[in-house]
Length: 334
Image 1 (cartoon, one colour):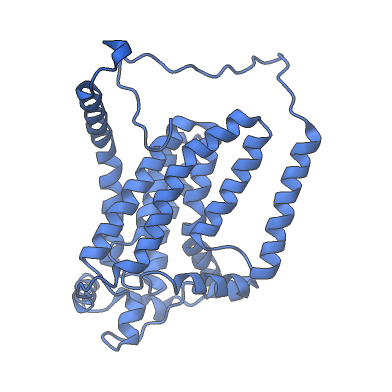
Image 2: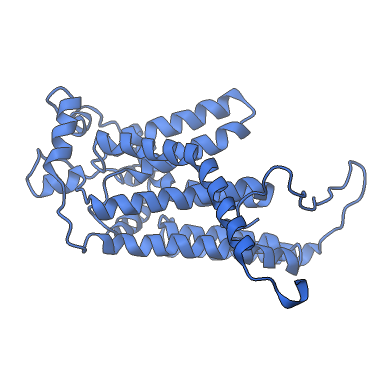
């Protein structure tokens, strides 16, 4: 099942299931030397890249590393598995690359940028005080800066990593997760085009609101990894700066929580997933990246896409059935 395919309806013939060897039964052994060489080469390339450019934080670069790892994994299992990797991932990668490219163009379409109304909404929520200003004045511990930076930067890592692990372990879950990721990305992009909105740090730079610093990457200095912060800032300088509404950082944190919660076996795993989804918007507001209303709408987008996807899948299957039924019969099937 690829990311753009829909699950088979109830009652349809089941797809062939891959046989797994029973305990105690020997499985086919892959050549050890090529596997070791491929993984060692990938690890050396990753380490060399980190030494030269710092830790990768750009989403496209990270997706490339995840695909490289999946490619090594698939190559050690034979050409059919490698072909399946390309068939599954190429459509998804094309959509996400198009999304990233279009983000940088959305702010040049002439729509007015919204600034003051978002700040006014946050002041109303904060009882007359901007939550971002209050947090930056009262939360300044180095330990928090380090944790906040890791949480903020995890946005660029978690989704590609989850998709990669799901593809290896459960391709049906991977396909559904991929559709959720695409749906959420498209919904966010449409909103960015129709409602460009400035984040707090940009509004403060233009003196529309009180002074607000952009400090989401300040923890890299605390962690002793300044190159990672420089690379992250360079990557952010190439995207749409007025794409604050909704907060897709919040949306994807909530979406990954919803996707992974049913698979969590232990209480600490469930607590960690929920804590991640809750802490992400706090970090974003503290760091000057988003207003509270941005994060609330981002969470609402994630919940809406997650709940609507089954209906969208059924509608997609119905469209495919009608298209198949209206297709002219081939001569040899007449």
